[in-house]
Image (tube, rainbow, N blue to C red; front, side, top):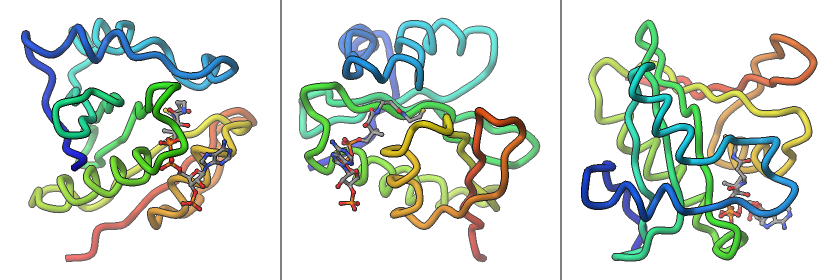
Length: 143
Ligand SMILES: CC(C)(COP(=O)(O)OP(=O)(O)OC[C@H]1O[C@@H](n2cnc3c(N)ncnc32)[C@H](O)[C@@H]1OP(=O)(O)O)[C@@H](O)C(=O)NCCC(=O)NCCS
């Protein structure tokens, strides 16, 4: 069963060690970078777990009441098994339970076809681009 588990002093290293597939490095920095970034730019960090096995990483930032999925990754050897889709579903469920969550957003590299497909399958819609590289997607949370 897929679950999101907040990073803590016991599990952060096993999640930091997860790596994306070759060719995907342009889409997401190493997890250890995101973990360091969160020290200075407040964010929530989660491991994506299949029961006790770490398979991915998730980072959420809340800015001006908008909940951003700033990072999501599934380890190279675990991709294509449905973990990404289930992790997004769990993330949406978690964020919808929050009274202050009206909208969930993500920005995706324009060449990241797989991530785009993942977010669109979960119900996100294209908002536009801020530049030619980053495309913005959102999901409005109905109350
Ligand atoms: C994007 C990512 C999280 C998807 O995770 P995943 O576990 O492989 O995704 P899933 O197995 O749940 O598949 C999701 C969709 O991608 C499709 N897919 C799976 N393998 C694929 C492949 N090799 N090529 C293209 N599409 C593929 C699946 O068919 C599925 O589509 P569906 O909903 O129509 O069935 C993963 O590829 C990843 O970690 N990428 C690098 C990091 C990244 O780009 N993050 C996003 C920006 S921060």
